[in-house]
Image (cartoon, rainbow, N blue to C red; front, side):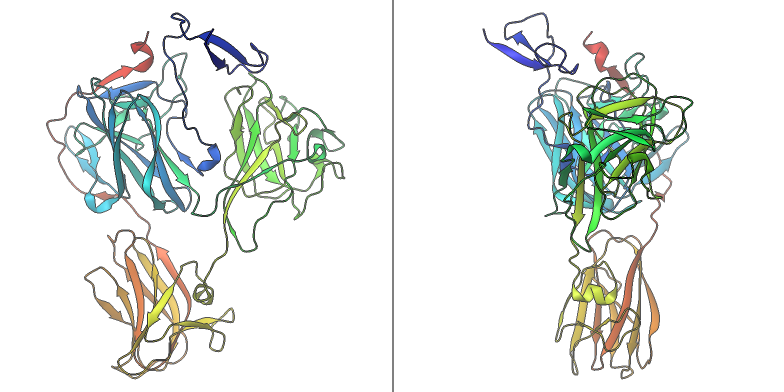
Length: 544
């Protein structure tokens, strides 16, 4: 007999170690089937920007096979947007993806909405998929995101033969009743010209569009795992602990003092080069069994030491000194057995996971002895600062050229023992250094020069704009502070060049670029009167 081999999510106690069989010819048991193809590890991405953690439960459209949806996110770190996730709700679905870094609001007597402008476009891609399902589309080029800046992922979806192109997550009693949404998150449009907030008509509803960030090139996440029985355990007080058990434990019994159950994990051999910047760090644990107890109000901390001993050494887990810094990691929903759960971003190596409230429940997760040791995933960028960057005390990366290169030197300095100096040039020559910054802001630095008035200049050349150059100095002695504004409205990848023309050397120290705080641009407008009625279909009901 030929049959499907199926794995259930009930754990290894069901069927044959969690697996069972369904005949290829069965016409009753399975009316709809889902296959997961080309799955990648969760460590392939750093951050999953989403508003639909419960998944797609409904669909929306305008009585047409084409509709537009948009999600507005705020970057939580300086990252690279590398992929977009969405649901294709029909065979041969065509998609167009647009990434914007700004948007405009419009007001009207009847509607309030917003639109996106070509000048704010950061990147785009398009394509089609053969089958219905969830897809992750890799962008042709990663898009740089700045911490605390808004960005928008806009999608046009065309679903042949199906008039509900946009997948949504909405509350459905007894299934996804916990779904929530806020104003300013998800928007829909019939024509891609004007977008309206979806919760204006459908409370607690979001669009199923995800943004996935990737590590910088050449720095895949390092994966470390607890490697011995003595490197993980749990305790409920400071005078005892449990090692060499199949599971670890975190949480509380109501009425007990905090912390109650604390689990400790030591990760050895973590290799972070000196001076490297840790982009992200996540703890991954695998659930030991299904637990339907109350919410776990968890707290992640590190042991306050550079090199943590195994837990076979004193002090015990609960008595070990901890860092003041902590990250909350709560578990409001029941766990599914044998499922990996990933923590929020942390920056720690020896992890202590405890509870911060006396109320709530507890959870069990696998230990080293249980066969699925906890993992630590770390992404870092090595310290590759150039001599010029170090001399300027900046994270910006510089190139240099002209008749003679700028160089780092330690003879004339303002602080920290070094500074950058222009090359040795003569009449009608120049020496320049150049960096790339994103968006509007202010360049600030200290300079020192003795120059010939009206002949020698330091210029801030705002390349690719029509603003020309600014002549900043002549005939000055001693270090002086300079601040120059980079024009508002600049788009990403516009270059600002510092260029010196003349004969006398210039020394620059402490160069900084300070980004302007971005706000949505407000402008009056009118919502098109051709807006079609919105129609919604609940996916669960369509298949009932």
